[in-house]
Amino acid sequence: MKRESFKSRLGFLLVSAGCAIGIGNVWRFPYVAGQNGGGWFVLLYLIFLVIMGLPVLTMEFAVGRASRKSAVQAYQALEKPGSKWHLHGWVAIFGCVMLMMYYTTVSGWMVTYFYKFLTGEFKAGMDAEATGAVFSNLLADPKQMTFWMVVTVLAGFLVCSRGLQNGLEKVSKVMMSALLVLIIVLAVHSFTLSGAAEGIKFYLVPNWTTVQKVGFGNVISAAMNQAFFTLSLGIGSMAIFGSYIGKDHTLLSESVNVILLDTFVAITAGVIIFPACFTYNLEVGAGPALLFDTMATVFNHMAGGRFWGALFFAFMIFAAFSTVLSVFENILACVRELTGWSRPVGCLFCGAVVFLCSLTTALGYSVLHFQPFAPGSAFLDMWDFIVSTNLLPIGSLIISLFCCNSFGWGWDAFVAEANEGVGLKIKAWMKPIYRYLVPAAILLLYIWGLVTFAWK
Image 1 (tube, one colour):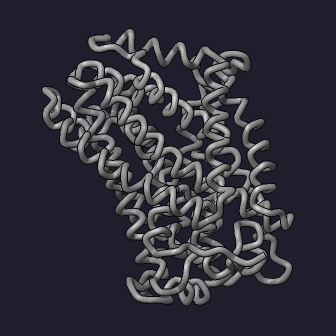
Image 2 (cartoon, helix red, strand yellow):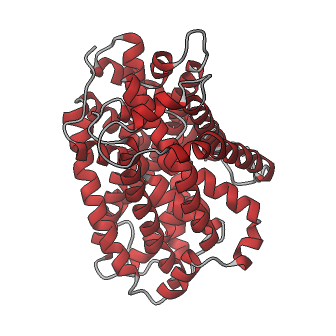
Image 3 (cartoon, helix red, strand yellow):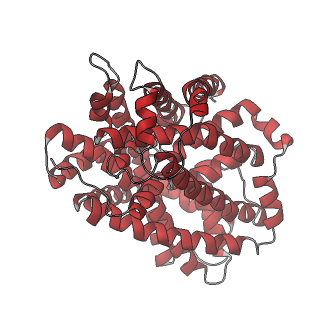
């Protein structure tokens, strides 16, 4: 089977950034920041991106580009005879499927809200309580939840069935460009709100008092998990795009570009949301409902709010779909390599599997009601715990050990691959950071995350 490739470097950067820039930025980042005290969380998040996210992202790209394979066969192509590193490839694909088990439902929420604003269900002057009831009613309705999840799955695999260049790359270019334009417009508007100064202060100025309410250890763990989640690290979803690119540019340079774009969107999403929270007296620690309750309330009080609300959630669909498409492509590529199936056949099989698995989340607030942790939690929280708190950091630890040690792929082989092309190079002095600091930090913070996790 001939290996596909991106048509342009811009296509690679936008698709890779799109995998990172998803609802992890526009949905998860703001609400996790709100739950964890704002400023300190953001500061620690940026630190973890640099000391752990950047090295691991470069490693994932290197594994993909050197092997020209997806997760399972990438390890098999690079590992030494008799090694078992490829077992993590299977775990990585399992992690991609599990991520989509709840990501497709959350993406469906974006589509739902776009539809509701377009049809006028949200009316000018609705208060926060009425707006919040719309989201609560959505969760309790299994038909709505399932329908919009199915729309997400079908649309995603339809795009993937058209090929890398004509499907994923072409659609991602349009979606990402549109998203970046709108998010700037909305951020500028947020500075005109009456609560802008207070919201920005909470969001970007570290405040020890707000952190004490949550616990500094919890904030550290949440910031690390978000750094991995937002870049989709540890489950091979970035390695697949490395396998599609040429060797004209160094991988450290490509990683920096992806992280800068990803960070810009994540920070700007908070700039949009927190001024609105303080303007309309909304709870910053509201959790997963934060984006929907906050932005719906904002648009209900805004001139032309129906139009702006529909437009906002249209572009939130683009943000969500950029990640859905990327992870779908990773799952599809692995299945096709293992079976030799064509893209259409692979899409039918993968779509059916993702749909069946996603039903747990779509029905988890009603028919399959299940509270794995605190009262009010659901399947979504359990899948997120498995993926974000466990599979992403563990996978990142395995990748760092594999790339930087002689019992894996090896430091010299990794650096030779990563440094090929023009751009930023990995230097000899970075070796202790990549080999010792990165895995040690990941392991310590992973253990801390388990110890401090709110199990009840």
